Amino acid sequence: MTAAETPFEPKIVAFCCRHCAYAAADLAGTSRLAYPPSLNIVELPCTGRVDVLELLRTFEDGVDGLLVAGCLPGRCHYLAGNLHARQRVDYAQRWLEDIGLEGERLRMINLSAAMGAQFAELATEMAETIKGLGPSPLGTRRAAGEIPSIGCAACGDPAPSLAESAHDRGDGR
Ligand code: FES
Image (tube, rainbow, N blue to C red; front, side, top):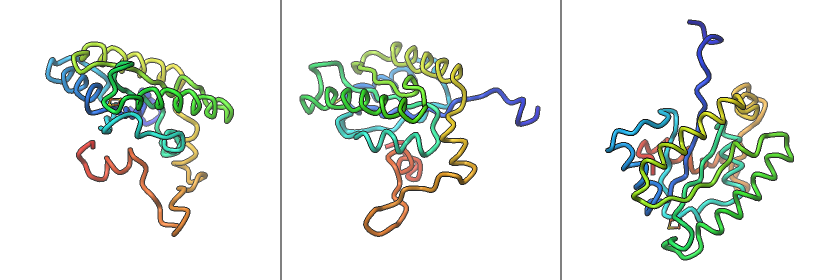
């Protein structure tokens, strides 16, 4: 099978709050519920940790889809982190659409730690949506070297994104 014949496996990152969605993903794994193997989970203390720039930066890093998974409304351990995250996701979706990328590539979900089956179901649904949309043109252009890394504004050093940091540490945190 040549590279051109290889079925498209979307690269999806899931920013998961450790108090709920991360535990739900863990539960899905221990319950042997299947969800896409290409889903890269990044554990966060709260979804309130993500900002709009980070969301957009993750797309620039070449992901095809991005899931932000936080606690149920009213259950955020930091009171309103998930509500702020929802606003930022909505805002970033509009930015994606403004630059010609489909807003469906970014999605926020809310789960409790007991919702392992729902996590597997929503992650699979997300992967199917992204498969339908195809690879992100930003990732293709980044791979071709057309988009340089942003780096630190102060010193110019390449600054890793949340997803890259987790990957470099190899622990998904
Ligand atoms: Fe889970 Fe804030 S603690 S979203």
